[in-house]
Image 1 (cartoon, rainbow, N blue to C red):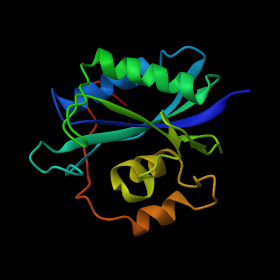
Image 2: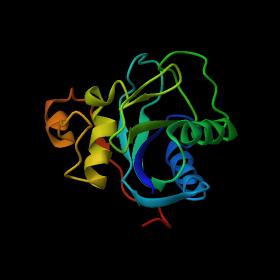
Image 3: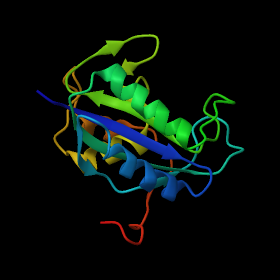
Image 4: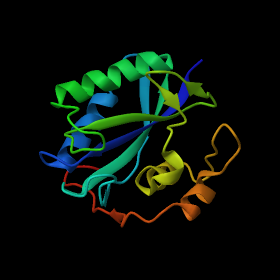
Length: 166
């Protein structure tokens, strides 16, 4: 049986929207996984150090037979293929892929925390999740819609669709 996983995407280097579009294509090719839906992309101010470009973010819904850690391994491999370097906490990056939700699972491990630890504070993650599923709830029963209404404003701006995309 497959699990619906929600993956957040972010970039603020080397044509961020193109980085995300390419990552969505790569996610659609993961083994034992089907891309169910893709959110619009949004621009927002960076969280953390402000001496970096604005971010472009989005999310995808995947139906997967992979385990959470197998999915994480694939996400990190895609990040590496995009030249991801971890030089500074919350610093600039070519691509950031995060498992936001994995079915109704709660995971608190060294490599993976699901739901994502900062999800409730990130409008750039919550809004794409709402675009994918307006009725979405976290494993603890909190509605994403309510979290979004209470979330700090990060100057989120919906971007127009890219040429050649849906």
